[in-house]
Image (cartoon, rainbow, N blue to C red; front, side, top):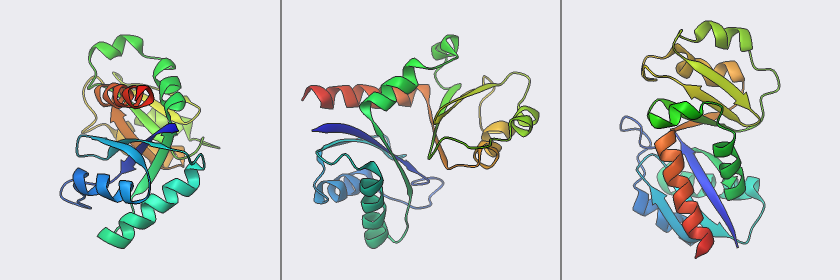
Length: 182
């Protein structure tokens, strides 16, 4: 059985699209996914499945949530190897010491024509970013709450994006590795 990571975009944000993790876990188990584990309330799930068709699985998960909860979140599925590779490719190693300042934006697809000039214009002097395949790495030492770069990245990249800070990424990886050993 393969280990997969599901990253949900836009659930439990400012009281919108509320979905408790115990409900999400039960829903996923009802779809036949095994060893479902969640991490914090923002929609991070690790599970095992024999199914390797991630696009189909993501569609089924989104449809099941829509049927039960009335909204369809963006669902990005990664394999454990894809998450491991994203961590290994981090271009800002020194920023790992301040994990809330380092963010990985997981992209729905590799951007065809990102507006790099606009990304640069949106970037504060203290911020750095890099795009590696389907990951948008952002080091924002002053935080992302008011970052024009963080707030405009999805539009300027031209593909769906869901971000996690370094601490969360590492915690999800630990859950995935534990599932792989189970």
